[in-house]
Length: 418
Image (cartoon, rainbow, N blue to C red; front, side, top):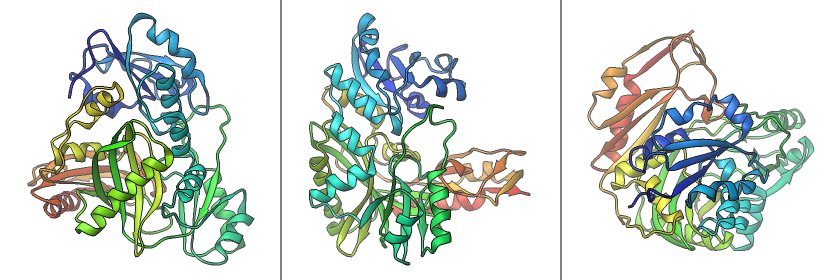
């Protein structure tokens, strides 16, 4: 892996503090520029963000979510220094990142692929046509569509172009009242700090509810060729909201399913015409093989990149910059150890006490235990990834050991609420 040349800059579309923290000190000082929505700069109080990271030169305000404002920055961004790479910092930045990279003549996902990845209706259409296994689905516009599609049976209702499980519901059955409530919860799902205040267009899906264990495939791709892949086993909380409870990698799979996921991710890359970048594709392993849930064209959340780096000895965020800059990369074919994350939960209410944090951090294999709530703060019921109270990360000689270690940490931390 290399770092950007001192006279070049890396442009991130979307502010991602975890990404900046991971590369800070490993890329030249002041070599990163972030493009962010003016409303989000205000809501997240990012005006002083350049003081937090040595690598960050500045944040440039421009509309990019369902807008072309980032494209108008091309001349400004290249006026003083050449741009080495354009990186998607967030889910909603994927199309704008691809468009800006294309305008600057740099490697990227490609605009058609990026648009497909940001719209699950389009993703279903394109991948189904290519023969990739999908659940039965239809676009919906109201409660009546949910009721007709479900026909009294189980159904998944979700936005087609949101993120972080926001608005996704798993329903065992629906009647007229249930369909109306499902539509309300899905269509009114909100992400105040993640989106600008202007009106955006949202689409919605009803899908067949598939049964089987859930996995994701994280892949680095260069000019349509997969150059690195990992399969992660996923655990979600029971109930109507499929929020991730934990991840384990590399997934403990036999050779048959392992090869099936490799075949599936390559078929997906070819179907959407993906160029260069990173993919995070989620699947359900059915009796007939992997069935596509959805796919993102940016670094996955939930600290999955940190788990990959721990397991494989990589620095994926730096490698992605190299890929998007057209530089050669070297990647391992096999992991060195297992890695796992478990998200910490608490009963909904106001936090009164937290115990066991230091003890959990001292346990064998534990790499990190972090809380997102403190005394006096509110714990909400889990309806999306934003509602989780914290996490524990652990490693082990293999996936089974990593899982034991992270569960021990989870059981040691106690968050009391009233």
